Amino acid sequence: MGFRLIPTSNILGLKANEAYTYFCLLAKSDFNTYISHVKLNTLSELTDIKETKYISDHIKTLINKGLVIKDKQQHIGNKGVFDTCTYHLYKPSMDWIRIDTDLLQENIPNKLKGFLILLKCICLNNTNYIGYNKTEISKLLHISRPTLNTYLASCLELKLIRQEQNGYTLTNTHLFKVDIRKTNDNSFYTSICEYLQQQNVIPPIYSKTPVWKMIYHFSGCSQYMIAALKKKKIPKGTNCTWAYLAKILNIDITERPRPNCPPMML
Image 1 (cartoon, rainbow, N blue to C red):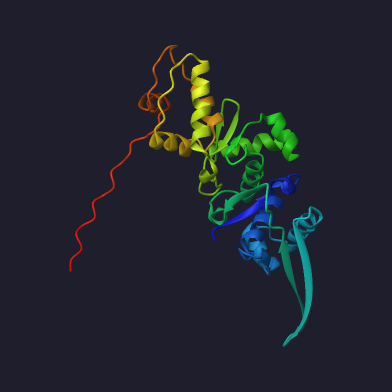
Image 2 (cartoon, rainbow, N blue to C red):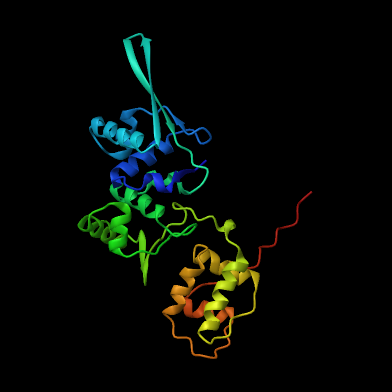
């Protein structure tokens, strides 16, 4: 399978390069058992850290954080005695995020990959929205403010994140998974209606297709859509339609017809 689960609370406190080493270890583990027999040299190639000593130091940190258990085995081969390691990685049953293993192939600096993993861990539950300012992010991730500023600037420049009115959003929902199916469309719709009513605006009638278009666009987070609506000056008394909201938010909610299948030739 193309993703791995990461425990959100356990990973906080890791440095960006340690977080990425951890993800590489996860990516090279069995999907079901989370057991890995990966070699240090392989991890060195994946992380682009030349000296395996630093990889070993990262693994020690992961062990101390309760993320990994390491078993060392001794073998006798044609060239004498040699050691192999088995890594048992912690597979969370709750409080986790999903990240696609395609992250390994992304053409961005590995430290930024690790930083994005850490950012995902502090996103609003089941979204890619980080509702914190720089001071709060610095404290949550245990990253110095100058380092954080550098990471954020690089991510913004590469369009890996988007700055919002009250935080940031991870832009790649393929790599940083959002489980849209967990989102209740009724609760999403209700939240939007309540906000519009508070603004003395008439909300649109429920319709499944545009509601789910909005859910997908805003990563399942009604608060993210509300934040976008706050930037728009909707006149009081406006009778909102989904088409009107889609227009002011620049969202395509068009339902495209399914193509007709050609008749089967017998």
